[in-house]
Amino acid sequence: MDRQAIISMEVDVVNLDQTLIAVEEMARSGEGSYVCVSNVHMCMEAFDSPDFKRIVNDADLVIPDGRPLSWAQKLLGYIDAEQVRGQDIMNAICAASGRKSLNIGLYGGSSDKLLKKVTLTLKQDHPDINITYSFSPPFRPLTEQEDQEVVRGISDADVDVLFVGIGCPKQERWMAEHKNSLKCVMLGVGAAYDFIAGSQQQAPHWMQKIGMEWGYRLLSEPKRLWKRYLKQNPRFIYYFLQQWLLKRKFK
Image 1: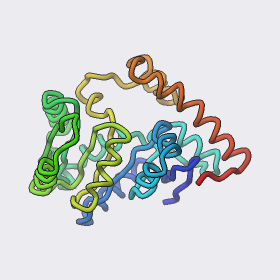
Image 2: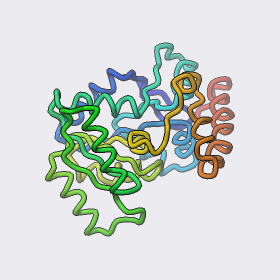
Image 3: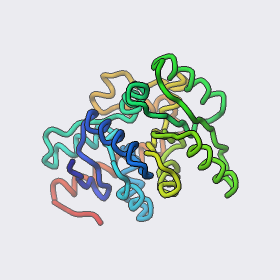
Image 4: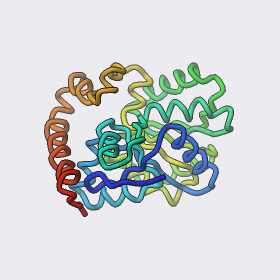
């Protein structure tokens, strides 16, 4: 698989099937690894923070969850580039869990109640899924002892694939910090738990197809998201056009 820099964030050129195969290989490697599910917001966070850029670019896999990123890859010469939505790869992994003997772990969610609903929904949708661990962390930072208990719990549950849903950039930092202490592949899935539980609605397919999923989310949560989208989306267009038209390289 090729990896292409979009502004300063490196993104793999993959499709859904390739991503599923790569995640399974990492899950069976016996080593810690992590996957970043990237979008415009993450791209600009990486541009603004050298430390966060290192975390994302050091990921074992960076998939283009946001359609603008797959469009950018096409404009940069990868005509077969595809969008790989985090929700789609999560569904594919859960569907393969029983057949592939992959143990699934859930870390994140806004409450134990929401995480229980996520677990129930996943088991209803995928009756043979193997969910061996789930934990909704508090919003405050964990103490060292609490963190050690989390690591021990994930390890004792023999988790192969851990879905981390605590929001960007927090989840990417958490995965990078725990890569050497966990022996599973971690995927940062953002708001996926809210979508699965039904506390948030996904954008209609036609909006996803034309790259307007962000607009649907903005209308759904204007108070929380308006600053992010109104600030980051125009900046992304500005800097990417420099990369594409002027062949400028960003370090």
